[in-house]
Length: 466
Picture 1 (cartoon, one colour):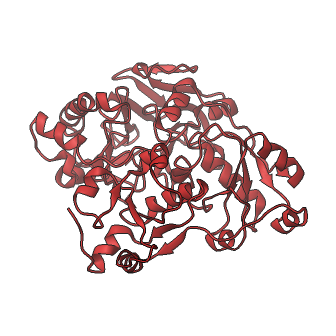
Picture 2 (cartoon, rainbow, N blue to C red):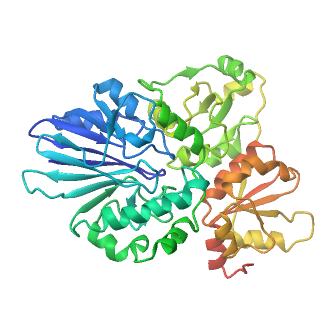
Picture 3 (cartoon, rainbow, N blue to C red):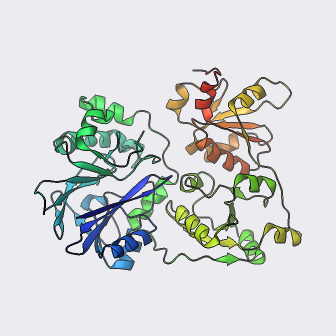
C-alpha cells in the first residue's frame, strides 16, 4: 500500500494519492487545481491513476478533478447527493473501491455538507479492518468541518447531521485508526484546525473539543458559534465545482508588451502587482492592486478583485516561468481563471513611454504607533476599522474601533471617507493586510495596516474596549 499527502500552505488544503504498488493502480482524493504533482508522484511509483474521488463539493477551492480526468482518463467519483453536473460515477454508503490490495470503503458522513463522505482505507495484506480514514472536511486535527458554507440557513441542520456523524460513524471507530483530513492549519473550513497534518481517532476522541460529550442541542450551538469569516468567493467556487471546473491545460508564461497590456487595461483588465512591498512602495503603476506572491495570495485575492475580471500580472524580478505558474495556480485554485499574461517590459520602459508611475502605499504601523496617532488631535487621527468577525470584536477591540468584517468590506467600502486616514486591524495582521490592499486600490489617501493586530496591542499593555 502507498499513501502520499499533498498540502497547500496558505489555503491549508490536503489531497492524497493512495493505491497498491503491487497492482500498479491508485486513486487521487480531493485533487488540487495543479494536477502535475499527482502525475509525477504516480509515475515515480509506477502507479496508474484509475480513480478520482471527491469527499464533497468544495467551497473554499476549485477542484482539479476534471483536469486530472482529461489527462489520465480516470473516472471521477462523488456522493450521489452532491448534485454534481459533470460526468461522474455516484458513490453510496457502504460502496467499496478496490485498488489491488487496498480497499476504500465509503461512509456517508454529512455535516460539513450534505454529501460529505469519509473513506476508510484497508490494506488487505495486513488486516480486514480499516487502518486509516480519509475524512475530507468532516474531522480535522482538533476540529470539525464548519456547517455554514452551504448557506447560513442550513447551518443548524447540518450541525445536527454532524452530531449523528460523530456519534454513529466516527466515535465507533477503533482508537488506532489514523486520520488524514482534507484541511490543516490555514484553512477557513474549520474554527481552529491544528498544524499537525494527521492524527488518530483515539487522540481526537480525548482531545478534540468538538468530540466532547454533549447533547444534540448543545453540540449544535457549539458548532455554529464563533465561526471565522467565510472564504472569499464561496458561491462562485461552489458553483464551479458543481458544474465541473474548466481544465487549465498546460500553464506556460504569456509575456505581454506594454502596448498590448494597455489595450487590455482599456478594456477593463486589472493589474495585479505581485512584487514585494518595498518595490511596490518605491514605484508602481497607478491603480495597480498589490498583493505579494506568497502563500496567502489565494486567500487574499477574493477580497480585492472580482473573480471575472481579466488580470495582468506584474511579477517579481526572479524566475518568471516559476513565478508565473505559481501565480496562475494560486489564482485558479480560488476561481480566478482569467489571467491574460504578465507585463514583460520593465517599469523603466513604462516610464520611457511617458506613462505615469507613482510611489507610496499602505503604511505598516505598530500598535504603539497607532495608539500615539489616536492620542493626537491634529487631524491625523485615523478611523480604526476592525476587520475581524463580530464574535472576535465582542471579546475586545481597540477603543472606538468600527467593526466591518473582511468578508463585508468590499460591499461596505462606500461607507468610508477616502480622505480620512484609516487604520485596519485584525487579530494578527493577516486579514488587515488584505483589507489594506482593497482600500489602497480604491484610492484611499492614507491607509495604515496594524502589524501584529489586536494580539500585539494586548501584548503591549494597551487597553481594550468591550
